[in-house]
Image (cartoon, rainbow, N blue to C red; front, side, top):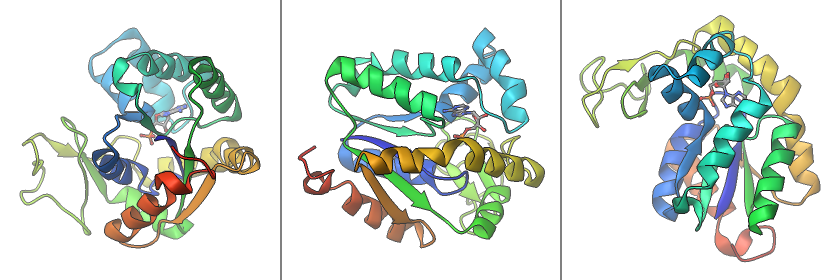
Length: 222
Ligand code: AMP
């Protein structure tokens, strides 16, 4: 499986990606996680991305394209991967196609997770994430057993700096302005699978499994 998750912030891409990669045995490539890791370790790239991310805007295409191209050179992506949060612009989608065309390994699925807009804001503002392992919680729907401590690794559980309401609205605006065009782009290629993301985590996971089932991917075997 060589798949992309599309959808607005708060659609559940990260949560669902963590599940799907376990079932399919492929690496989870999240540009948001890569950029947060670069920030946390204080690399020049991380510093460059900091202000842009904190404003809810998009990091320049060339920066994320280079990150993803480098990651796709790692041998663990040879048998497939799941991209989460990339591509986010048409230019990124074109850069990705070029990289994959060189390897003769086109995408096998693009999954669009659709969620009602009002639900997105409630989901993101209540979201908390582990600063160490990236596990995702929600203050109401799925809090950690001990407040502020990750159930899985004992790391600190905090709100992402860009998960406050004003920034969520800005990130949704950026999604509509820059990323939504990818729905038509991939729709025209016949790869797009729409999944209703309003249900429970289990229900959505089930729908995504179906949407990425090998025999149902763009009419070809993955
Ligand atoms: P995410 O964790 O996917 O919500 O990403 C968090 C932030 O990282 C975004 O609001 C952007 O500032 C930045 N970012 C992540 N992925 C990309 C991308 N593909 N292109 C540009 N900026 C990105």
